Length: 436
Image (cartoon, rainbow, N blue to C red; front, side, top):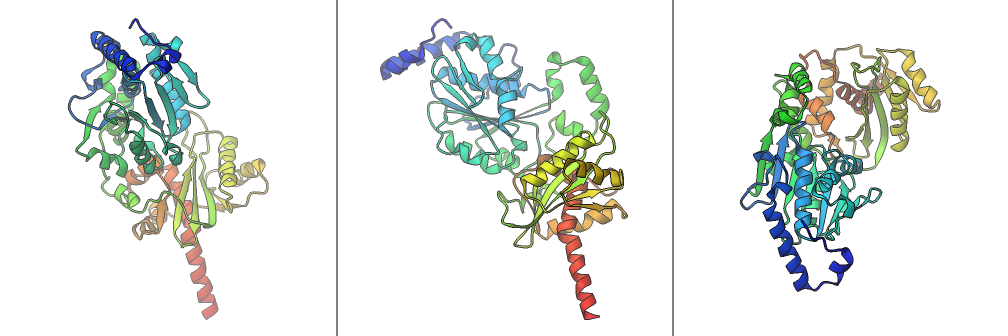
């Protein structure tokens, strides 16, 4: 393109002059189709026809970020408006959608607009040379979507959004201009209620693609390694081949069971615990340390509040657990000590000696410990607060006969057991003793 009208001139332009400029810009874009996305595969081209939401369900490495960045930049250059970019966290939107190697800034650089773009990474706002703006939003801050008027929006990794209402609010805010309020969703598939509901809408167009569709731009050695590790596995079907997997036969939890009792906010809490399933090593091949917080509400129900599971050294996971305990004003930390014994409590007390720690031992099999917790879910007495995608994946894919020992699931079981099951047993013992 040969003409870029400065912001000050656009501000002074009459509606007729602006209309003329937009027609010129659109004509120039039409002449130079290769500017949209050189080398784009058909699956990366916007669908034709009348649609409101374009969902790309694709494996890792498919090119979802590049497709989303090209699409939103294309629209922003065509019409001088405000556009939204939202991701699970603000850092995700900034570091991946904008500053990543396939993000918006890289697209603007290729198109020759980088020098004319102003990027405020603290506020999460880009101002393009034609006066359009791209505003970043975090799906964790639902209220920040209110009061906005976007011409189009890009939602990244929607399956990992904590609050479904964030998408609803962004949908309501995307409603002005000549782009028909269109939205693009780029995500690795997970069968959440939000994703399934969106796919069922008649105005949604879905593109499905695998990691290997983009083999020409990926490392052959890395692809071979991925095939070796995950070919034929559930995680490979989901993360590489983008299958929207439903319930696992024999699993104690289902996505419908969790979705049916999910809440957006927790009530007042009687007690809050942070449960830890510690890993004994911290190398590249080590297990994660499960860290899950839950609370007992004043209504007698359990609310799963946070999942801070990570792979880290004992000092780091201990600090992460204590930080979560402080953040939620918890009552105690519950830690499994089968692996590590007294060392687990020692590491926690090194971080903060005042934190109450209850040590628990897995003397019974995992099925015996997990089934009472799953029963509480079936009774509608356990609620997830917002979305906890990775924890829910473990719950819905683990079967008692698998022999696996998922870290997040273990931590959850310890937390719910401490809040509801052990307390109930204690009350029953007290009643028996009084009666005797």
